[in-house]
Image (cartoon, rainbow, N blue to C red; front, side, top):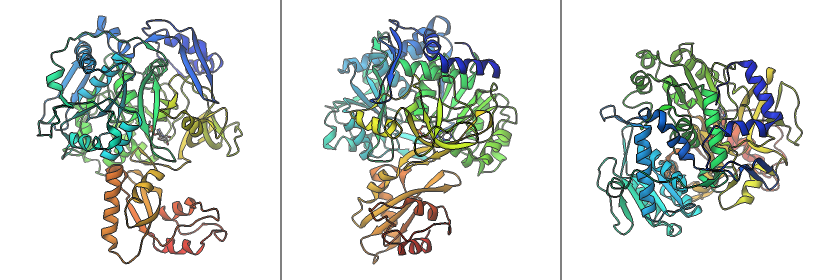
Length: 632
Ligand code: WTA
């Protein structure tokens, strides 16, 4: 796969990708190892939806991540691993050692009865064994479902149950910053739920060596099972459209849904987008600070970099441990050339002042990336000046769990970076802006709902176990389009600026949460009648969580109730979903049909005191004043 060389070539390739998409993707896909070539590049409709890429092609993604590189790169480092504490020894894996480790784990899974199509749930910290075991699943055609290890036992249980996982892979404990977390305990608690009977074995990686409760009929130690296996394991032949993984993500309504990605298209697109956006070359050292529990980690820590044969870095810890210079220390230590992080991390580090970042040289850096939420101009400029020393292009990459890969972004050093703009769609991506009634807005200087009108190889195929939910969420509101849930503006030269979600999804420190999910958790508290949750602008997190709560009665200790509500949310979802602010109210503003007027709640949460418009048509207009007066 050739790197795009300049703007003119980008324009030419983009044009081709839209006018001859099948030819365009056929050529790119031909650069991979296939066990059998496809009969047809694409067959699709957005009505059911039914999308097939590289129809009847057979392959295995791990042969493309590992085997394919062995002749030339067996001694090249596939990834370095930097531990949470700078006092612990770092580790590294060459392409050959990674290949062997993956095969050993793959054979272990087979030994315990895991077959093609079985689902395996991961609840693991950022240790190399997480990446290894994910690849081991893919090697034998098992489907991985990684759950971010900050979610609660309840959330984990919901996800295990929804996809009926046969095995859970976890660690004993985890050190994250100064915290010491009992990971396996959360798995044990989750497996108490009746819906989790499907789990036959728990494979436990000894990470810290702390004592754990052991269930001998179910639990297996990694070190008992893995080391004795053969380091060869034949890669299962997978159809392009066989499931590769499930990743749960939040939406406007109900419980998180399992977004399904398939083997062939996901392979082609993550690899293509990784290479073009970051303009990766031999000798580069790429570092993405995300957690593998999110899509960024799947596509751009595990699969993308390995597919192109890059050398990358995986980091176990957090940006502020032992101090706020850790990221920059690591960049200097490994000579990182490509650094990819989230705006929330940049803002958090900015808040510590410049002394930390100024202690380091950061000479090796060539490209900086941003992902997960809109990057505000102040953070963009700090990143550009203090980290990139005004000489590294910034790629602001817009995409989603559902898109599988980066959709709109600058190509580093090829197309221009503009502060707070994701800029242009990648080749093969055809975004449109729609008005609320579904009309395509033409030209530039327009704002609308961001939709995509043609499939790309890594578009989600379904939501696990509920195809109708997939259709309704993404393909029904605006027939013929994939609806992203984001609003965007298009400016001159066709550059896009992402405004943010237009639905009831909030983005807290780059983590996606549904307001309904948080409300359901709050409502579990016996002293709560009803609640409404909205996002509000937060200096570091991007958005904070503001909860309006109607208590059973006001004759209570407010501080205790608020604390208990936060605990209920942490227990139901995880600490990331704890409200930043809770306001007790006697009612919520409702329309005559009983719908909560969130517009008003968002304004109050955002600190606005006027511009509420006509509220007289509400069922209970008087409540607006009470809410305004009681804002916290
Ligand atoms: C938001 C993360 C602005 C957006 C990869 C999207 C962004 C949601 C950007 C998906 C960006 C992601 N600029 N907003 N560069 N990247 N978003 O599924 O609202 O965790 O819909 O995927 O994050 O979040 P998800």
